Structure formats: structure tokens, C-alpha cells
Amino acid sequence: MQQITKAVIPAAGFGTRFLPATKAQPKEMLTLVDKPVIQYVVEEAVASGIKDIIIITGQSKRAIEDHFDRNLELETRLRHDNKRKALKEIQRLARFANFIYIRQPEPLGDGHAILEAYNLLKNEPFAMLYGDEIIQSKTPCLAEVIKIYEEFSAPVITVSKIPRQQVSRFGIIGGEQIRPNLHLVNQFIEKPSLEIAPSRLANIGRAIITPNLLKTLKGIKVKKGSELRIADAFARYQKNHPLYAYTHSGKRLDCGDKLGFLKATVDMGLAHPELKGAFRSYLKRV
Image (cartoon, rainbow, N blue to C red; front, side, top):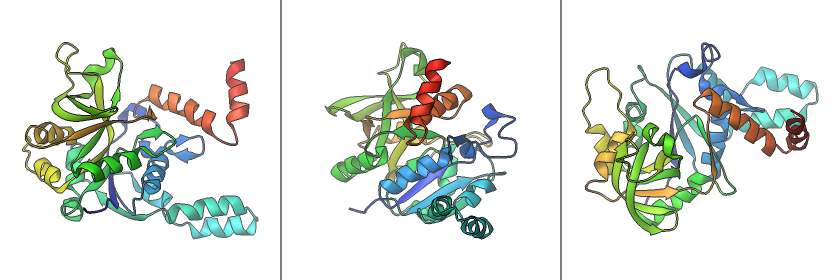
């Protein structure tokens, strides 16, 4: 069995929900306390054993590359000012992993973005993480997903139980429960009505994709200019092949819209080792 050492992070969208904040900076670079959102995602991948991180970018996304690269001028200034802690922190960024950047010419969906890296990924299983979703947990969520892949040698998606009123916004799975927190998928319906939804388990932003699943994605034809979603491949693949769904035990922070981002800011503030006490006291006074 091949070890999971590569991860792809689709990060090419325009982030229109956050305009004007995202006019000149990627939504993945919006800051939660003292780190951009995508750094939390990268840290989870690295903590799960990932060595190579492929980030699919688009126009106006250069800030992501700069963030995970060295800044020698800044390092010199911090060294001169004897700011050793800050110096160590920014030097650490470039050593997280081997970063590879591929530009998606048009934002045509996360499936299309993944296929931009097809030649780098086609011969081995790899992890996929959304660049605007953080999962708070004691054990990295991706590490748990990788363990399930290693047990079953099959693709694994991550799901979360959502409120009834949100069912029509997500891809919803149905399936046979293998054990607590694990299902063998036998239905995958994208954005169903509540009446036909097989469950309230929604596909979210972590997955292990195998070469056969990637071939399924590559074989899907869409109209010119239409989006290709990785969810389309999940829905097709599970009809003839085993696909597992893991219900993660952590807390999902969806930073893809304004309200979700505000909630994530509060959650990360309350978890920050230097600020949580003072921040909690402040919230009690509000």
C-alpha cells in the first residue's frame, strides 16, 4: 500500500462573498487571530504526515506563495531587532513541506482544479483539503481519515451531521454503518431537498482520493464553461466501488462566508494560548 504523502488544496476561487476584503487578497489569506486561514489547513496536513502540498491557485493569489516562502529582508530586520520568537515563527513557514503551486486558468470548480495537478497525482493516493475549512480536534482530522484509508485501501470522504435546514446546501450521503463514525456509502446526492435526503451527513472538506477515483473525475464530461465538482466523482464512483465516509469528531469551522468566518474567529480566539483568557473575559462583558 502506498503511503499518503501528497495533499492538494484547491484555492483558486474569487472569494466574492467577502468583497471588498478579497479584491486584492485571497480569501484563504484572511486572518484568524494571527494566522491566515490556509495556514491552519496546512498545519493539519503536515501534522498528518504530508510532505508535498500542491496548492491550486488563480489570479491574485500570489500572497499564498509569498506566505509559505522565506522573506530574507524581514528575517534580517527581526534578527537585528532581537525578535527571536517572531523570526523562528516565520522561518518555520517555509519548512512546513515541499510546496508546489499550479494556477487554474479559470475557476471552474474544485474538480477541475484537482485535475490541473493530474500528472502529479495520477499514480498514487493523495489527500484533499479545502483551503477555507478548519477542523478543530485533538488528533488531526486528516490523520484519522488516512488511518481509515490504510485499513480499507479505498477512498474516504469526511462527513459531518448538519442541521435539517442546511441539508439542501451540501452533498448528502446515505450508507451502511460499519462502526461508529464510519459508513460504506451507497448514496451520494448533491444538494437534495430534505424530503429525499438519505441522512443529515454532509460531505465536507477532507478526503483521500485514489487513482481510480481520480480517473472517474477525469472521465466526467461537463458543458463548456460549467463547473466540475469533486462531489460529481464521489456520486459516480460509489455506484460501482467502495467509498467510505468518516464522521469526524472535531469541530468544523467553515470560513467560506462572513458569518462562518466570524464564528471561526471567536472559536480560534478562545483556543489561542496567549489570548483565550482575556478574550473570554471580554466576551462576557459584551
